Structure formats: C-alpha cells, structure tokens
Image 1 (cartoon, rainbow, N blue to C red):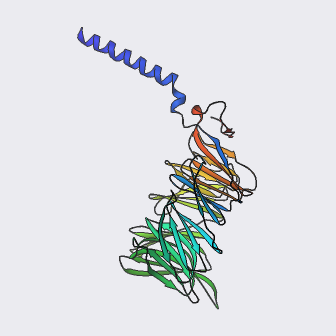
Image 2 (tube, rainbow, N blue to C red; image 1 turned 90 degrees about the horizontal axis):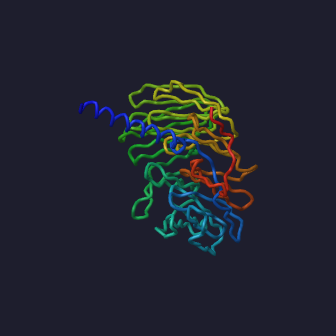
Image 3 (cartoon, rainbow, N blue to C red; image 1 turned 30 degrees about the horizontal axis):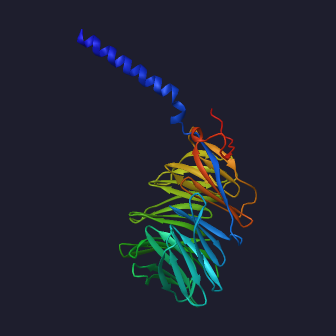
Length: 359
C-alpha cells in the first residue's frame, strides 16, 4: 500500500514537471535576437572605439571618452597635446605622445594607471596571456617589450626583420613570426622559445599572420596553410585557402574561410563544416558559442538550433564584439547593440530583425 502511494506521488511530480517544461519551453530556448541600446555621439567625430568588460572607450581626437555598457558617458579625458595615437588592449586604453616618447595607460574606468617612457616608435600594444606587449620600431630593429608591474619595459625579442605576429606566454615561452626578403624572394621565419630552448622554422613564400603557443607546440596560420609544430619535432599541416579568421578553443581550432567555418582537431584533421549565410570576416567565442561579424552583418549561435543572422548597416567603419555587446561605428557615430533572449524582449524595445527561422 505504501509502495503504491509512493508511485502516485512520483507520477504527480512528473506530471507537474513536464507541465512546467511544456508551458515554459520558450524560456529555455537558445533563440536570440539583437536590440539597439543607444546611439553614442560626442562633440567630435568618433575615430575609434573598444569594448571593455565594464565600459566602452571612445577616441575622438584629442579626447578619450568612457561610457558604461549602455552608452552613457561616465568620464572624459581631455588632451591638448598634438600627435597623439590611441591603442586599445583588453580593458586598457593607451594614449601615445609620439613627440615626447610617453604612453599613458588608463583603466576601463578612466583611472590613470601609469606613464611609460618609450624609445623608438610604438607600432602596437597588445594583451597576450595576461601580458601587455609593446611592439617598438627604431632606426634598425623591431623590438618586443614586456610591460612590468613597475611600468618599466623589458626587452624580450629583437630583430632586423619585420615582425608579423607573436604570442607571448612569458619571457621564456613565446612564439614570433617575422618576414625576411632576400634574392630568392620572401619567406617567413617562425621563432619559438620553450623553457629557454630556441627553435626556428622557415616557410618559403608564405606569410604568417597568426601564431598560438601552448605547452607542447606552436600553431601557425599562413596565407596558404595551417601548421602545428610540436616541440618534440613532429609537424602537422593542412592546406586552407582564403582564410579570414582563426579561433582557438582548447584543443580545437576553427577557421573561417571562403564563407565556411571548418573545425580542426589538435593534429589538424578537418571535421565539421558550417556554411555562413552572411558577409563576415571575424569570429568570437561568446559563452561557448561561435559568433561571427563584419563588415555589416552579425551571426550568432553558429551550428546551434538558434542560429541567427542580422544586418546592422552598410559600409560600417568598424564593428566589434565583447561578450553579448556589439559596437558599430559609422561616419563618426557609434551604435551599441546587445544580444538577448528573444522571449525577454518587450514589444516596445528596439529589436533588430534576424533571419533566424526555427527548423
């Protein structure tokens, strides 16, 4: 009798559970849409922008504006100096006074963190594996510096050739690609340092535009091929034409090429392919899903049931994503958009139509 009563209770609970799922199934859907948050304009034309984790940087020479992620201006940093260049890296903005050889580093809330003295011309500032790397060019060499906690720069690499790309884990574990020209033509030199041990590979008549260093290998992408050079000496290779972008996610590598995303495993064996129904050239990993964008279109949840595409405008000057926040710059004005669950959008919100249709 007691067993029968327990079965009845379990049956009632199951009915309640499946009833809840049935009436709320849309709330569990991965269906997404895009809403327009705000158009951001300032007194000067916006020349560049970057989306940080808590804010948005806007550069309107000679002013650095900082907004919250809803587009409301929270700080204005006025500069009167001439010949100022701006660099963005992760959650930082760098204002470079070329004539004085100084770089001022600001946090995403507008706090001046440090002033860095540089010798030579700052070509780029990047954020790699929790490191801030300065790429400096002087009269004879190109040099990579690591920014220390005390705001000093420590040289980690120097070459007389042109540096193409790099990935720095720490000063003793890094990979750098440079291009070399001689009588036989051009070639790329791929240099790696693993626990202090140096290795180099020459790739004739290929240009390296992406490298990724891990504990056992170097992944390199050229205008013709993808390579994985193992520290133990083995090499894996695949031929891929018309590559637009690369996304590394753990042991998997995704290549965007000719309007297709192809997934490669660690030994570069190609797997799943996905045709992209939009004009895009960049990929991002957003909460475990692949998103694609630019120069006018955005696509999300690629390969999932809720895959969608939308057009934010024509002839955008720049489009960037950080998480579910999107920025689109056109004619000196910035529009901010957000990717949200479709069922959370009110009828009066600025929903951007997508081409997503459930199959």
